[in-house]
Length: 324
Image: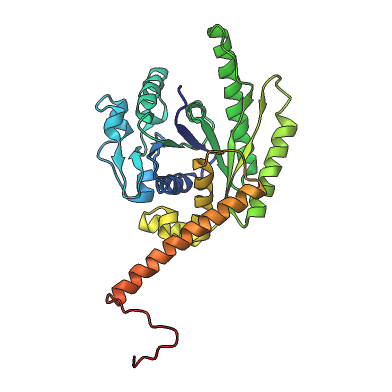
């Protein structure tokens, strides 16, 4: 594939870690930065993206695999700035694609992705071959987990690494002169954290487990993980998001969750993307996002004041009395 655009795949080995919430809010946050973003509900047998945002495209991936529509025909723009290819719930055939169907999707996906700056794949939970193959299709594989689910995150990294190694060895044998990639480099997004320190320490625990148990065990291949960032836990906000069918970052623009999503979107959109969040970068991104939020808040307050009092009065001089 020509990796001229950034293709992001969000994966997890179990459900309930908030992967779809993150995918939707992250797509909206990246789109706010004047980028063309396509979100694909690639949980092919049990897609829930449309339920999260209350937006149901006329056609979805079922129509593509039934040969009724081209993949490009499925794209619709959402009210949240990004484009969507919808999935379908409870479709057994979609959840178990054969080889030819996967290759058809891959060819069409490459063609469609050329029209976007970023493509986000919200994958099915689990470590079945279909989910893992789609995770490795992306330029960057993002493992979404939480401090309470590090064992499942380890399983997701291990499964992807095993398949990565298998594919690289196979390509080396079949393609003359092919130079196999030695390292699988996933990004880890820590969801549902109490604070940034918990997110970073949880990542370090996961990184240590991977280093001790997987790296070096299958020479010459290895794993180089990077920390993408963390998202705060706010159960009430997530419930409100599901009730209103809106992205979390849209339901509460100035919440801690929206702040975290904006941090991650900034990291993804910056030229030095995916390098991890050291202290200097975090400070720079924090200042940048705070300035953006301050400007948005100023505009919102101005609009509210104008609704209450649309007539603009000239400001008085400091020592000027009202009678003047």
